[in-house]
Image (cartoon, rainbow, N blue to C red; front, side, top):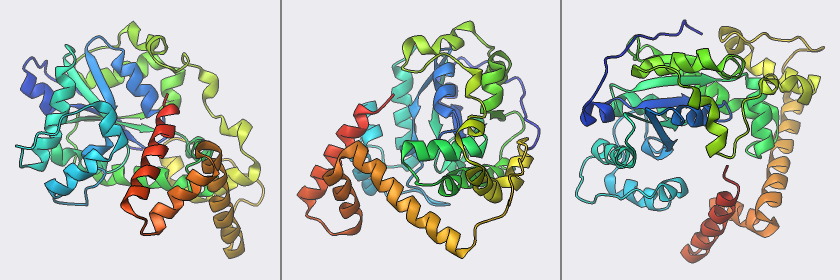
Length: 331
């Protein structure tokens, strides 16, 4: 990983400038982005309101989404609905509509800085906010892959590498477009081991400093206090075979980001038969997790709505029931 870049930004007092340069946390899911969001949001001068995937997740490499289609997707998006934003029908420009949602979030707080998290198409953030300040969060992929399996998003750590690799590649492609002083690289492990220094590094992006309240995020959230023992959980929870699978896919990127690569016996990629077995395990384990969370029939319904032309009323009922379950599991 390249050396982190920071400079002291000018102090900003007007609301327009505040909205033009949001603080955006980017990185793979399960990399500690939510933890960092809660810590930054506990600063008396910083409001990081939520994950804001809906700002970019439906975009391609260039151009903007049709506004009618965008509004339709927003109305069916659980995260957007939970934020309670108003869709201004008079706005006829995609960036302006997205900016209006951030303005609504900023209007709910007296804090000077506004921010949010993005895990998907964060390479489009500079197109929407050329003045954005970015914190690139990265975590050891052995723990990311393990955590993705635990969440039920994937069925094997082999498949758990996919989002981490895509996310890191996306940021590396974007890195050269970013101005010096507009971003920092932050490792999850460094945040847990030396939170004061790591958080001060992040705060410097928006011309402020570490505040002790940032370490009291657990008092206003469902998260536990910082625990450095959570670093390198993969050493206790992954088998040598699982470690081998992650490292065989991620070793080059791991070394570039300062993560040592272990050498379990037989450190090589699985062959064709091994990958077929992993693909089968991936599907079976994902369905098992889905059935435990949603119930057997709703889990089947979620698969059916993705693969079959169900009646609109059935599709809506499945989505509504699934979203109710998801809300009950939010932290």
